[in-house]
Picture 1: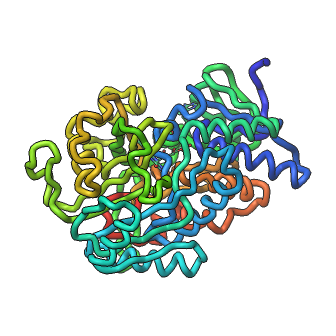
Picture 2: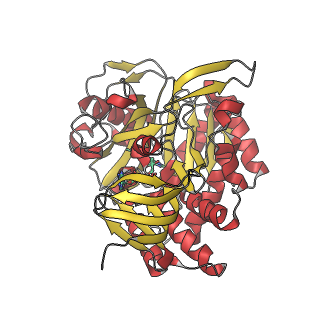
Picture 3: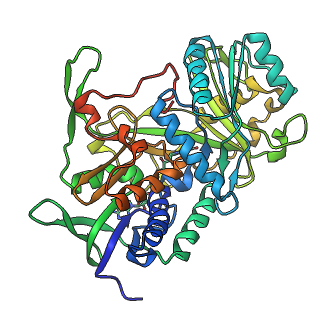
Amino acid sequence: MAFPTHSPYVIVGAGIHGLSTAYHLAVQLKSQGKGDGRDIIVLDKSGISAGATGIACGVIRNNYFQPAMRELMAHSVSVWESDPKAYSYHPVGYMQISPESMHADVASIYEQQQAIGYESRFIEGEKECTTYMQGIFHDWQAKGITSVLHEMPGGYANNTKAMYGLAGKAEKEGVRIITGVTVTGFTSASDGSINAVQTNRGNIETDFVVIGAGPWAKSFWEMLELPKTVDIKNPADGSIATDIPMWVYWSLQEGTLGVDPKMQVTNDGDMPPVIHVDTDAPLYSDVDGSLITDKMWGIYYKPDFHFGGVQGGAAPFIVDKPADHVQVDPYGPASPEFIVGPEFAHMWVSALAHCQKRFSGTMPQYKDEPSGGIGCFTPDSFPVFDLMRKNCFFLADSNHGYKMLGVGKLVAESICGNHKASLLEPFSFSRFANGELHPVSNSPFPWS
Ligand SMILES: Cc1cc2nc3c(=O)[nH]c(=O)nc-3n(C[C@H](O)[C@H](O)[C@H](O)COP(=O)(O)OP(=O)(O)OC[C@H]3O[C@@H](n4cnc5c(N)ncnc54)[C@H](O)[C@@H]3O)c2cc1C
């Protein structure tokens, strides 16, 4: 098929956001009699799931301290639930297991989940938490846990499999996904709107652009000549912090223990919820008993046949250099710089053994293969989902996004309805200048 020179809608990026927007936009256009999937093309310089989406752990949860994030996640979970087969979605639930320093934050998450009808249980007290956890895993042994939030919906999806399911749904609606095409810039009209997308294979004239570029968000921000820094208003006292860099990279640490995934079934032999533990209990090596840390630490894990073992991660760390100096390509496991090393494996497997006795002595089974990758974060570590030019929706999810399957649906509704969906409002770029910031939790993770 000839390379297109015009398309009413051009979507950049064949990750979760680009593909979800493409599919839902096709459905919306058709249902409103405004066109269909043949009016949409998706461009990707590599392929489907070549970015962060293809290496994500795939965890889907609601557990967020920020009300706007919780509402958005509840919406996304409903989209995952709408077609579990195509989305390779495993609704096993999710558990946030926490120490006393996070008790009050998690209690408020639970209360607000009840208020929005998101089904969860909240267990409080050290003894009660141990009993509850041992009712699921007989070998549970983590100490110092004083609250457990058990979300019944959510769980995880098999990352690339789900994306091929989503791409198939989009293509069935007539969307054309063109891979191996690099977007290099945009041509603008005098009113600032984009009238063509420039690529290494020629220009594509268009009426509307959506950018879902994950870790490459900064490059597209620059192509659109958007500000490199922002001023942020402190909502408490009205003071302004000036010249805060718009982008910062974090390195995500994940890996797989190459055991039979069934090793992690529940006492009843079922596939278990995704486990996320944050704790301030000292962490000792499962290999030689040495102290690994006596500071707050956190891990998450789940059995996953797609990864071939028990897969998960630990708290990420900030890439300690200005964003302009960070090399995003080659991305993910192909990066010589941003893959996890033996320190991560030692910490993570020891942490698994700290939580459940069955993992003690499994260090030799850790899969010694490249894993992990970087994420491009905004100044407050929450997404910017906004119209950044008259006809350009920018989806910068600040690395929250595999679980956010519903965002593309909201973007499609916004485009077709000519007004921004209310669930996306709290993620406007103007929140920095207006001081409309999201509350911050006591979790060690930048995304809770
Ligand atoms: C290790 C790791 C684990 C994670 N685990 C989870 C998790 O368990 N749950 C969760 O909710 N989130 C998780 N995330 C975050 C999540 O993966 C991302 O937030 C999400 O996948 C971003 O999706 P996206 O569609 O915006 O970008 P991506 O999936 O990165 O897609 C962007 C696409 O743009 C393409 N592209 C880039 N530049 C160009 C160009 N110039 N021209 C054309 N195409 C271009 C790329 O090839 C890529 O395919 C994780 C992230 C990492 C790194």
